[in-house]
Length: 75
Length: 189
Image (cartoon, rainbow over all chains, first blue to last red; front, side, top):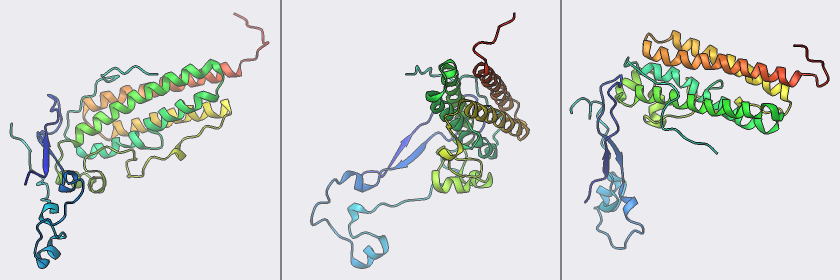
C-alpha cells in the first residue's frame, strides 16, 4: 500500500522569527484513489472491522498525531 | 483590472518569536476595522459616488489590499513554525482546532468577518464620513498593536501602516470638501 501522506518543503526565510519547521505534511486518504469501490475486496474480520471503523483494509486510513516537535530544527 | 507586483508595499520584518502577537495582529486582517473590511468597503462604494472621487476610492481600496498582504505576512511568519503546544500556549488552540495554521478572516477573538461590518448607503457624504471613521479606527487599532509588541522591526511595519491610515483619512476629508463645493461660488485666489 502506498503512503497516505505527502510532504512539502515550505520556503524558509533568512529572517524568520522562529526556528523553522522545514517539512510540512498533509493527508491523502485512500478514498481519493479508488474512484468506484471494486466488488469483493478483502475484508477484516467482523470484530476487527468494528474496531477500525471499516470493513475493508483498502479503505483503512490510520492517523498518527503530528508530534509537536516533528520537523523542528534539523537541516 | 489590476496589475500585481509580487512584492510587499513596505517590507515586513518580524524579529521576535512571539506567537501570541499573531492572534492580536489578525484583528487587522479580518476584524471590523481591518484591511479586508476597508478594501471591500471602498471597492464597493465607488460605484455610486460622484465621478470626482471614484478614482480616490479605487486607489485607496487597492492599497488596502496591499496592507492586507502585509498583515498576512506578519501572521504567517509568526505561526508557520509554531508547534501545536506553542499555539495552544499563545491562545491559538481554538484556531488550530478549526484551521490548523491556515490564516482566516476573523478578528482577534475568532469572530468571523461579516459584510455587516461595512456599509454602502448611497449617500456620498454618509459614505465618505464612514470611510473617515474607518480610517481613524484602523489607526487606533494599529496604535494598540504597536503598544502590544516590543519587536522594533514589527513596530516599524505597523507604524508605516498607521501612517497610511492618517493619509487616507486626509484624502477622504478632501473628497468631502470637493463634494461640498458650491458650483457658482466665486473662487478667490
